[in-house]
Amino acid sequence: MNKLAAACIGVWVLAGAAASAQTDPAPARQLPAAGSARSDQAQLNSEIIRQLYGCWHPPTNASATASIRFSLNRDSTLASGPTLVKVTIGTQSQGVVESAMRAVRECRLHLPPAEYRFWREIEANFDAGPN
Image 1 (tube, helix red, strand yellow):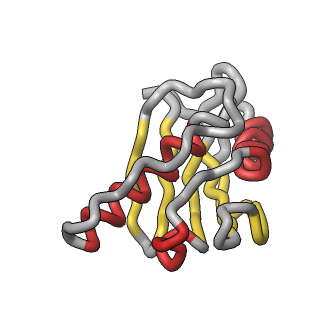
Image 2 (cartoon, helix red, strand yellow; image 1 turned 30 degrees about the vertical axis):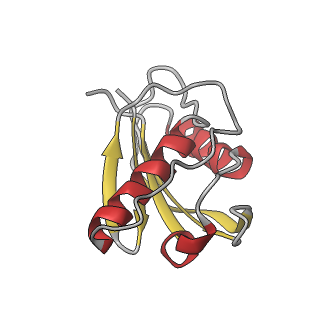
Image 3 (cartoon, helix red, strand yellow; image 1 turned 90 degrees about the horizontal axis):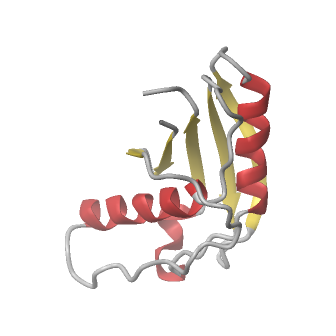
């Protein structure tokens, strides 16, 4: 099962939902007005993962992981990157890297502008390995 993790302010969250063919995911879900900062941040990380995962299409039978770093503008468009941080050697490593970079470049994220300080810098871990 493919997994994707994203880090905003150092928090990592794993997701294992099935990828879809969309590159323009549904708008961000409304975060609760009250609650702990940690809970809100976890929800925001989950939302980023959900949206990126819908745009990621790793090669079939791949077994590699790629960590990709990128920056976003306040309107959620790509400001800089994507930049490869790390890749594990495995089946179709290059394909995993290319598909992860393509997902970051082509996915139109919808994120809450009021929370920009939490999501302007993201490092996402795209894991195509079997589970």
